[in-house]
Image (tube, rainbow, N blue to C red; front, side, top):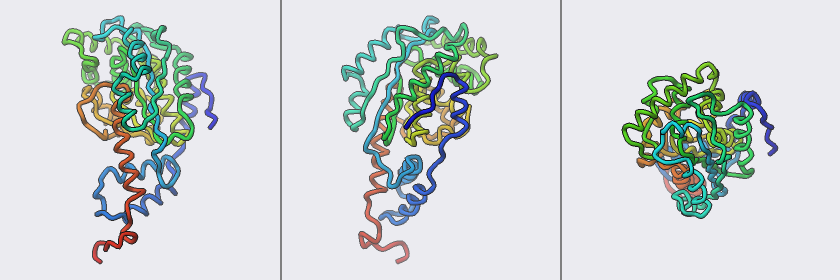
Length: 341
């Protein structure tokens, strides 16, 4: 599929105004098959909803989960200079190499669930501007990162997982949430990679200052991304938009990923209907942001790693849902009496 080109933030706004909707025919077929399967009605709970959701957004029946990709985007943030992280910025590049070498947690999960992993470095030697002093990115830089993310989504993908790596990006995620939804900054700020109390207090102040400094620029979600986000966050949002255009369902990882894509929903309601949040992060702001984007995470395993790890782990749940829907016998096939017969 040829994607529309993006040169400015306004180009993204234009795309968001005309998004593909669910495929009603595929959804109707899923709804028609479900009552025929050899189980009590509703007994598989959310698994039933997931299989229908897959078909509706793939615009195809039956749903499929053969080609699954995890895209991890890595970026560095100028706000790290404000002492908001337990780790220095060079860890981002070191962890990217760990991904390439196959040594990270997400590598093991991808191998376990037959998920193709792609890691995308976003100008790691050029951190974004310090958002506590002004916009993190120019319009051109934000649009470039966003469009790059769009181009990384492969055609004929059945399911896309998105994840990230970037020292300082939980600060950016908290600032995005605070910029989008207001409330007390402390509600959105967590310990990230494991900061101490003093650093946590400073991190809250930096998030408050970042939103205050950029307040006059924050007209919609995309402005929030430009001023308070980062290249890897913009790329994740771009990937999610491209997936919508290509009719690919998406699994969102944790707090950072959810904050990144929340800018789409804030700009255009329904922009994340083709997405599911894979797990609830222990970052305190994640529960709140899931509520804001009308998402109920699939899993709750006390994870906060990032890397797309929670999203990849949820692939097993999606595969189980689709397998049950597609391959279970019907009452007629199995010779099992239906209720009341």
